[in-house]
Image (cartoon, rainbow, N blue to C red; front, side, top):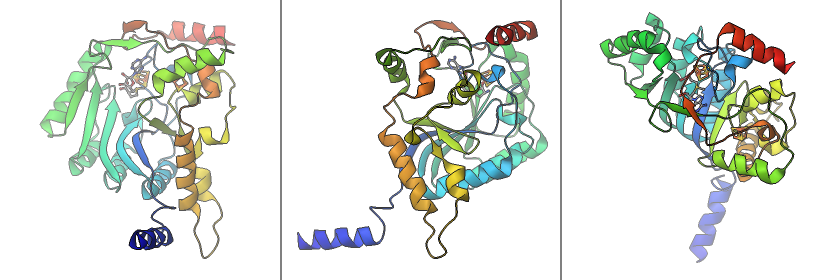
Length: 297
Ligand SMILES: C[S@@+](CC[C@H](N)C(=O)[O-])C[C@H]1O[C@@H](n2cnc3c(N)ncnc32)[C@H](O)[C@@H]1O
Ligand code: SF4
Ligand code: SF4
């Protein structure tokens, strides 16, 4: 008994208890919002927001900071379309060398042919798997990237979506009415509140990849302090000269975030997840997109 107590005190002093690393089961790491497709029912509403590649130096510094303090079971590089990023090779190589991640994937729509520097980065990091979303609308283009992946012995697989039958679910669009009934919002959120999956976008860890677009399209920035982890703000914060408390702050924020993970977010009021299934990746024409965005204003 005495030994256990002493051991506990030693652990606390060593920081094992107070500073222990939280786990993120699934981190979706966005490298931007730029995409080559315009999927009408994109669960992240990507076609309806500005198309940008994130600053690779900043997002990689954030990710390095996360990995120093968190154990990540699966990291999925995503966005929009990750291979549109001009520094995709650098990102792949950097992520491939990070510690504390069990599994790394890149989720692509398969519409772009890989540049030689991207192929080289993937070959250098054979533990990274490419997941190609199996879209009918992009079959011809996908044949080309799949040929490249095969010829270069790069691990990949075709992703057949959640239901395995070429269907997507509808999560609502850009013109939904705000749901005021908390019980109903909770019911919608309960569909997402399962695996502890989170999305990193431009310096922040968020509950899902739809939140950035909802914030913009519905002018809904509102959130509780524990709803988001501002990784970049913590990383760039002033530290006391003899005690770098940023690590502790990040771990504490992530633990608080997960403690409150079961609570729906303000942005969920604009989400309409129904049981309705639709063919995956149906494309918007330029006119349809224009019309939807006009109706929005
Ligand atoms: C948002 S995409 C980003 C990566 C890449 N652009 C792609 O499409 O594969 C990530 C994954 O979400 C899936 N997805 C997007 N909208 C969906 C929806 N409404 N229902 C089910 N899955 C969806 C896509 O099929 C893809 O596998
Ligand atoms: S689901 Fe479609 S629109 Fe959305 S990011 Fe992927 S390819 Fe782009
Ligand atoms: S906004 Fe809320 S309800 Fe909608 S997908 Fe994200 S977490 Fe789920």
